[in-house]
Image 1 (spheres, one colour):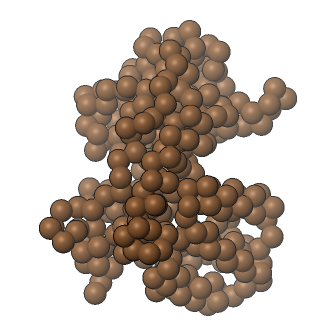
Image 2: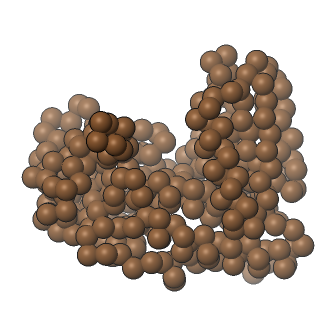
Length: 312
């Protein structure tokens, strides 16, 4: 059966209705008057996922499994993969580790992905980027079937998002949508502005906002008057990796501000937004660190549980 048809079939239960993971919004931590605590929200989400994993184990006699593929010896990548393994264990999922040498051939890397596609014990697959220079990242990652694409970044997953079909969505944008919900942001009809047009975040974030009926603008390095564009935003999302780019007078009074950027400076880790200045203007804002970051891994776990339900 073609992957698109298989995914559509897997997503529907016996009664033809869409199968979904348990709702994760019911126990989210309360937001303070000004700061959205991403760590607290992520912790509440993980509690809901743990309950979903327990229910899945009760029904199927096994737990969801996340397979990670680490190629080479990049230290940062190894740290990221280890943190994802710990997160899986904390919610009762199985972490399935695959490590390949940096000189692995294209054929060997693709063969591993295809074995994982066919393995019923594997609910989701994550190929940790970057890959060694001799490997084409898109060539390898696009071998992941959409049912198991828990990063939501393959061409097929991106296409499903673009035209509004059900599928797994990129983790950071999904995490941001949950933070916006927690902050009480009213997206229907709101003016939402995103700084950054990357395939990893800006573009899928824009699509999710449009699905929520926001009026969405994506700004980038060629935007002529960036400050004016920001001042229109009821919801402002910054994801460009430029320390304190967004000043307090760029922010519309009462706006919800989500800071996705992170940069190491002499003052420590800071975001794309001048946090102290934004506190005086915004109704809610995410800190850096402790805002969006924890939600990314929480969303990865949610995607893995959802994939398990679709492929069970």
